Length: 278
Image 1 (tube, rainbow, N blue to C red):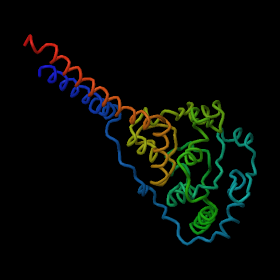
Image 2 (cartoon, helix red, strand yellow; image 1 turned 45 degrees about the vertical axis):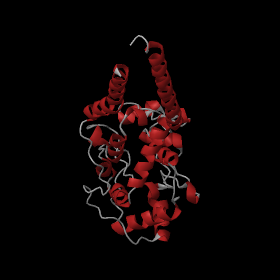
Image 3 (cartoon, rainbow, N blue to C red; image 1 turned 60 degrees about the vertical axis):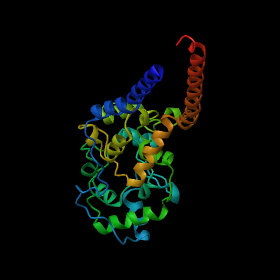
Image 4 (cartoon, helix red, strand yellow; image 1 turned 90 degrees about the vertical axis):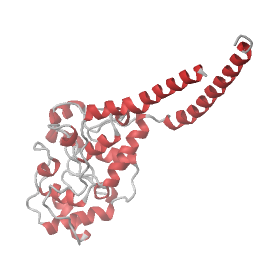
């Protein structure tokens, strides 16, 4: 009976270490994690409604296509990649699926004033003050009409993060060269391959929603992702950071069962061998 009590104590200590200490350490390291604000309540620009996609395409070609492409509608950017990197130190994104992954209120505020929307005063895109609220609503209606509606987590990471971040374990390389990223942001953005393991998922969700929540003063801009896009991004980062987790967990059940059986057999053997002495 004494041996069973010792075993029970060891099991409790191991469980406390596994489920108690690690989460506690993460909570101390990250402090209080702010809840994501998917309404982007700090932005005063109203959410666009009732735009005209046909007019929006004309406005896009006139105001956006000099830097941004739209592969879904066969529009190539007027500036090639190398010229863009030389001018801005970062590759302007293709906007094919922007309207699916970015909140439309944020997108409208972004077009008006990228620096205010992204919380990054050095953001490379200039404000589009010449566009009215109606113009912006038309552009967003056009972007919505050509965007894919159901992107995977990997596709969202490539679209939203791939200009600056690599995911080398998944063979995803940042579009912008490291030297230019360093000049633009002050440092090379981290590789995201194991970010889902290095950070709590709640922290990642809050950070993606507003990087200033998790790292005040960071040069990473706010992206304006929707709740769905953020959750898919976090789920993908979690999955690729530990791709064999489910397989390991399934194996762990059999290992624990084996250990319990062996413990029982060992105890029975001990009782049989030592019964005459006791």
